[in-house]
Length: 377
Length: 175
Picture 1: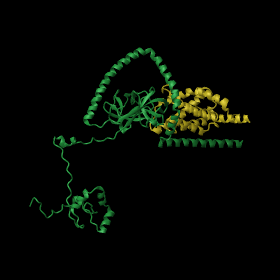
Picture 2: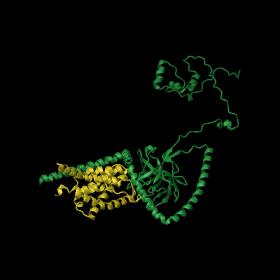
Picture 3: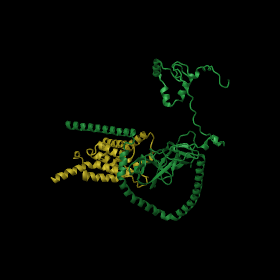
Picture 4: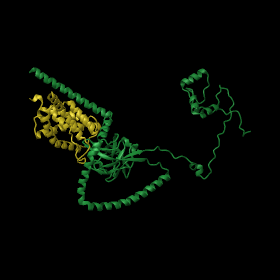
């Protein structure tokens, strides 16, 4: 009886130890995840690469069923939808013409102003092969990866606006973190007014707008676009519209990640900003209508007479200044070097100031040489 | 001899079954296909065997298997590492502490017991995520997760009961 209770107590205490050890291991895992966020990313990318064919195989009949079910409901209101689409198409054509003419005008202005060209944006179209909706996570898997030159951080958009950005890129698949996800934070600009804000996901359907400027006022219906700050995302991508939910300003997203089957992954390639090369026309002389100056060969320096080394000459300073950088470096001297030179009796260059010596700029001007100029003669 | 080998294999299979069910549950739950267009979050299928067999057969579902199942859930879910591992361990701890009360519950009581354990797990995950990202997550998806899990536990309980009776068997200490 006693031995039985002892055994039970011992097993109970070992179970307690195991519980404590496992809780500690879980804490270590959390800590590792915090200091090394990409801890599981490689494994995730590998897993999604391996199951991608299975996901596509399952997704295809599901998508078919969804479309079939959706079209069954649409059949009953196809006439109204058709009329609405025609009306919308006519309106959009008008806007398309306006957009094209404004685009041309913008290009002309950029040409006139010699503006730095916009960054090139390449894109890869990918199919959505999976969506995961978890209590603390909203992600999506697309069937394009590093082989298609997709990199983490790139923006993912559908035909309506931005959906999210890539956070893990495998060989053939990539994980997209949606704008609504708890981890998502992207810099946005609110138009008109160019109010800078941070779009912060909190796992609700509409991400929060955290305005960075004090006193900035937002209004219902203002447009939210990406600001391009940090050069990670292209500027001007449509995101959503501002609305007030009673406590906070939020963005009602244009894109619907739940219904997007094909998305584009944008590759923002920033070109190095180079100033335009100067031509003869850019010279002020030419601009004033005068002929440009002809380049003349540099005048040969006048031969200098050999001077005794003990007397520092004013020409030595000019030589030191005009010397090439390596020569100049040779002539610069630290405290030890000065000491060595003084001990060895080498004359110091006049641009080198001894410790305690008055700077040359504060020294009184040297007495004029005892000679007259040729003009005076 | 054949029977002996067959019997030992069956026993070995039965021993692995609870942990295997947790792993398969995590795989199923994290299959990135949403049948409700993201309206309902995926249930924590991996947690259900951890809770159930942690109560019924703690010898086959020790705490380290709960930790492994949670880490596997973390790996597949794409979230912060360690969050679900800790949540699963917390759920196991709750079940371990309240074993005498929870193991005797039947039908609705069993579901209420799981709901309580689930609440412990989700609250732990919620707190960890809040500390991890230093802001409070939205509560609505968490509430939806609780609801979805409790609903899914009803068929899962039937399946686990069947598995335990026909394949795994009761704990030897019960005899």
